[in-house]
Image (cartoon, rainbow, N blue to C red; front, top):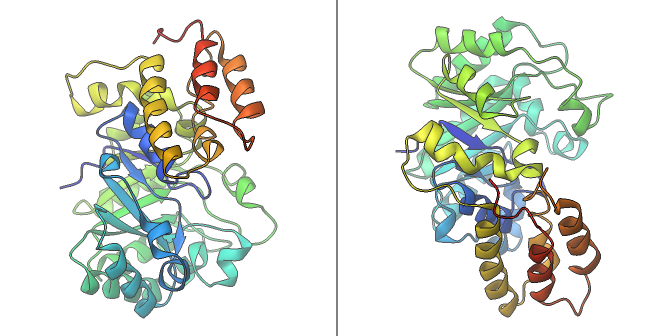
Amino acid sequence: MIDRTFCVAPMLDWTDRHCRYFLRLISQHAVLYTEMITTGAIIHGDTEHHLRMDAFEHPVALQLGGSDPADLALACKLAAKYDYAEINLNCGCPSDRVQNGMFGAVMMKNAQITANCVAAMRDAVDLPITVKHRIGVDDYDSYEFLRDFVGTVAASGCEVFLVHARKAWLKGLSPKQNREIPELNYDRVYQLKQDFPQLEIIINGGVTTLEESRVHLQHLDGVMIGREAYTNPYLLATVDQELYGATNAIKSRRQIGEEFLQYADTEMSNGTKLSAMTRHILGLFHGMPGARQFRRHISENAFKPSATIEVLTTALAKTSGANQK
């Protein structure tokens, strides 16, 4: 059973396995999502590269991009060989590349196709199949449209919906603008829960603090945070205690940094580039003494071919407030 009270959103090019390992050092209970991976990449590309994960990351949900039921089913079967706790279908991404592949947010325009995809995925594997979507797309932005989309997909057996509380504009706005310009409408997501009390509804969009999360949790089953969790990852430090009732001690930023150093050292011995890992931890000391020097030292040195783990050791030494919480 997955407890989705607090989730970290799938973020393309960001939430790779190194990022997820780092975030798991901070919170043991938050549900982590992979970046969106297309069915084509899994079926025809380097499957191991795309699906590999460390057991320490669990619970992790795999997010798939695709619109062909057979391809989605095959990708699910390949993913079932790994330790994913959930497989999520992306019906919210508005990028041109995704639109050209006829998946992402454009799938909201045909709820039955989406339902067919979910049904094929559920038949393929014995894992929870969930859907992440917007509250609308282009001019299809009424509550009735949203309600009918969720109702149709739910009829295929989907029981969990992760809802970005903005609609998507497929033309005229960049993916970044689609995360900022369309107005947030939390009440519409709340209404979904009232109309579908049997479904698990998770809200996403504009949430940046645990205080805001608690407000949403009065109405919904869970909260998903995106960019803020990446740029200010220590936000997760109290999630286990405050939202999951855990009693374990809260780690200091320095402890997290030192534990990640050990991980990075092992990964480097297996051929992973230091910069591929350290790019995810630049926000660890966000707002703390030495944060700028920490970021600068990593940014200026981790990418060098001669870079060793000493780059991270030196960067940590520059954080005079490292033990502060």
